[in-house]
Length: 187
Image 1 (cartoon, helix red, strand yellow):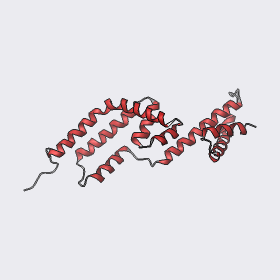
Image 2 (cartoon, rainbow, N blue to C red):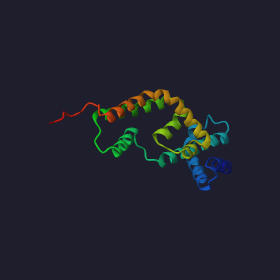
Image 3 (cartoon, one colour):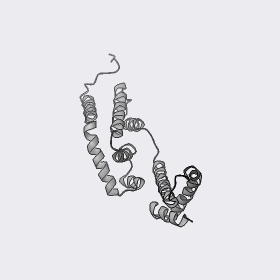
Image 4 (spheres, rainbow, N blue to C red):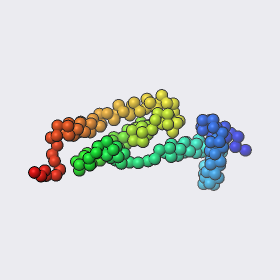
């Protein structure tokens, strides 16, 4: 009875891809079948309730696909992997601590952002997603995704400036060779 309406909703939500819309309707019906007895006494308009449930299921499907499109790894692992690939010698204990502090600082600064900006910052800066993927995951335009990333960057810049300064000091010390040695020199 409500299937044609829900199929039209899913068709719009799933960017007019028929197979995705059919999948979303099927999943919505399964969720509705499970939830309806629990909420039956509270539902005034069944079609409105089913529409909202279906929109939520479509959003969940999109989020699952976005999460599945990238292998999740922690920021520390990524930074360490890049650093190890670019530097032939092993990291000093100070470098490891500095990298961990920077990673923690970035994660806590992102966590303090407002929710819409927090999500795009996580996608762009931690998961390194492209603007097109971010836009699809959040069902927004690519221009809107770029604008949100720009706003997040502007809010993060002052919060993370001290990490950039610390990183620059370490690099300058490395270049000048003035960093303290971790092992006593022989000879």
